[in-house]
Amino acid sequence: MDWFDAEGYTVAREVVQRGVAAVYVVAFVAVLRQFRPLLGERGLLPVPAFTARVPFRASPSLFHRWYSDRLVVAVGATGVLVAVSLVAGVPQSGPPWAPLAAFGLLWVLYLSVVNVGQVFYGFGWESLLLEAGFLVAFLGSRVVAPPLPVLVLLWWLVLRVELGAGLIKMRGDTAWRDLTALDFHHQTQPMPGPLSRLFHLLPRPVHRAEVLANHVTQLVVPFGLLVPGTVASTAAAVMVVTQLWLVLSGNFAWLNWLTIVLACSAVDDATWARVLGPAGVDLGARPPAAAPAWWVVVVLVVTAVCAWLSRHPLRNLVSRHQRMNASFNAWHLANAYGAFGTVTRRRTEVVVEGTLDADPDAATWHAYEFRGKPTDVRRLPRQVAPYHLRLDWGMWFLALGSSAQLRWFLPLLGRLLEADRPTLRLLADDPFDGDPPRWVRARLFGYRFATRAERRASRARWVRHETGTLVGPVDAAALARHLRTA
Image (cartoon, rainbow, N blue to C red; front, side):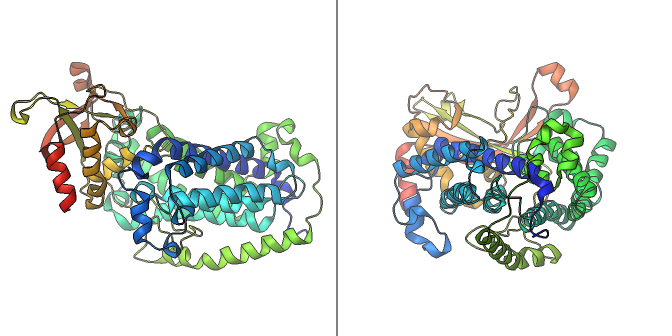
């Protein structure tokens, strides 16, 4: 079975399984903290209303049979506990079916969440986590060697992530082709981080070099993963460095961290030994037992299924009409990936305000501060990734003019008028300390990073100007009437 066993990738298996499990911990913590106010029984987009109109076969989920907020808590808590056990390496110490069962449970639970999550879970990294969790389940435990077919599937996954992102950029926007994309992107990305302004203020030749390096990393380097050994390990190292650069320059939930973990699947034990020393690769010193026949059969069947499903993303990669972050089946396996095919040139923010005054025309208005998105021009953007602030990301899409986001934004205003405590906990600050405002409104502002001179003069990190009104002053009664007739 020399062709089946990849005995030189025991450290890679350890890193990938524990790393993917760590991302699942973050994902299920977000379920516990955010799912109910966003999608629960009194959420902005309630799951029961979704499952009533969307059949199970189109969006398979445990919640199709029965939904309750208590069940969501049980799913989230179970996911955290199982994922923590995998981070600790407990199932990996048992037979091959133990990590298979643990990751399989995580996949089923998180698939159930994603498939009813609607726009709040409509991100490419949700599918990436599901596909990664499914594949690493078949890497087995320490008693057998990592199966080479599963490692190849992981390398194919990383290639799709990087190559898909590179091709969508080249096909989607001239700013990527003329190397000017990062003149805008650091400033207009959905969730700037604490260093994003410094990246934006770098000289333009540096921005050109950033874009060029990105193209090389995404369009050329991924093919090196298919040459096991030093070439693949070097390609993985280049991708890790590039992803860490993205981690420093912005907040993209767990996309970058998960890509780093998956890229490590291509690093062989010999390379780990050179980097970490012999003590860091002692797992590779113990020869595993021969893989049992049932395990070989299971792995080969799964490999064949995944290879067959991969025809869709392969066609997508070579298509002139490439789709970005697309799932071709309801199980989120063999997906298409990509990001920022179009670069936003100007940043618009929706600023939500409320007042306790009776007359909205003569009122003193106070802004609600969100946890991640910019509002206060003096506030330093936070580092929140790998955690995912779903409401804040939705506000970015809302500001772009996405009509799909209005379906939850108007209910959000209603929750603010009620001073709904679960909803307020999604925000960084309630200017009314739990009291319900009399009126709320939503204004539009253009934002840009302050120059160094502007920062010295005003201490502000952003400069903004009002561009319009999204929702004028509205009270609870008027909003309730509008929602009933909508």
